[in-house]
Image (tube, rainbow over all chains, first blue to last red):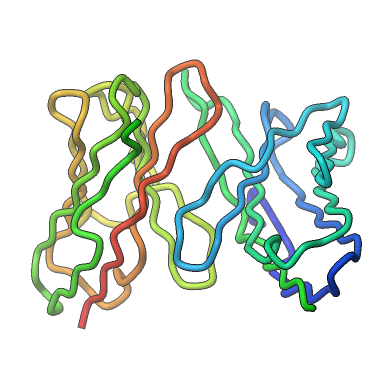
Length: 112
Length: 113
């Protein structure tokens, strides 16, 4: 079983729609969680951190469920510019440093 | 300010050739990661440096892969006797010791023919 699992999609949604992605992780000792965005043929960039209490940044909401070991990303009022791959990232302690594990990424295509 | 830079951006190698990929992290960033990203996949961890110390190389796929960071800044990933399955984008990322956010370079796209 992969340490971090995501549905690769693609998710094709119309502009204005709400879309949600989930990501599950296998290491119950994982400590911190993130969503990164990667545009086609570009490097990943941090979208937002995910906190236990949940956090919101404009149209984006991220949540963490430690009991079920998953994190989610909700995008409201989708824009064409949201089209990208969304990578789930999990950090866990590994002998004194934070090891970083990426999911495969979920591809989102927002269509006009 | 200057971000993470990588060179070359593109590299075509014949099978069996050796290649060297360079990463210049953000100045002052203690932590440096190398990842391999195959088409349609997420970045796969290769190795991690804290300053000049290579603390984790568990992700290096074979002994043909070698990485160094001798002075704790610039890092080089070397692949010996390249194989077709080495074709991928190699990403470098750096961060400060106490931060969770990684800053990625643009990657080196390696094609082995």
